[in-house]
Image (cartoon, rainbow over all chains, first blue to last red; front, side, top):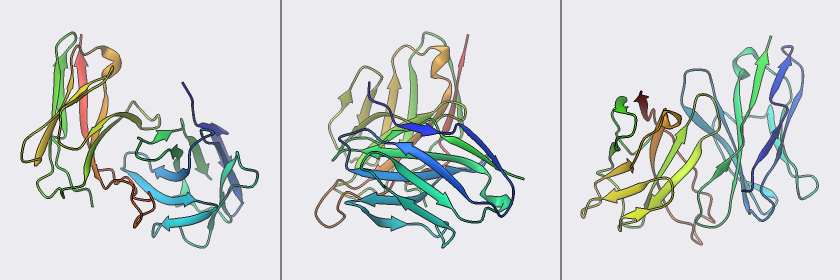
Length: 112
Length: 116
């Protein structure tokens, strides 16, 4: 069964550093997403991406965040200057038209 | 905010059917009901979705009431591996106005515990 692959599985970074979280969506999917889940809290939407541009973003997705699909296969989330409150599980997801989302297994980001 | 209401927790004996209810009284005519689950801290896993007819797949069955204001997810023979948080989510279908960008809004879900 096709999978969404995320790397790394765990990333520890110092406050103020830049991090890039990587995702390889399912190859024939059209829509791509990032969600995050702070420990013990709900899964929260960050951003959706379609046709090589952001189609929607949440209040969380401020100027410190950016997404890119540089080569038609990878889909990345960059946090420019990490804060302690960015510590969370970050989930990438992709889907085809009118199908359910397929989520990756997540990257646990720990900002120290 | 999530447009669904679910009980915070439920227990079910292993081997029995687990019936998870969901209220979505404000659902619109074209909105689908989706079910996902999250095992521990893994990524949410798609289970099933439906519009108004009952649906069944290899994982579960979805029963939607005739007025569409509530639904029930049925896991026919629960196993210990079905212990997870189950999310009921209402979502608009892909169309030209939303370009398929209708995001999933997760609530707190139902924590289902399968008891040996």
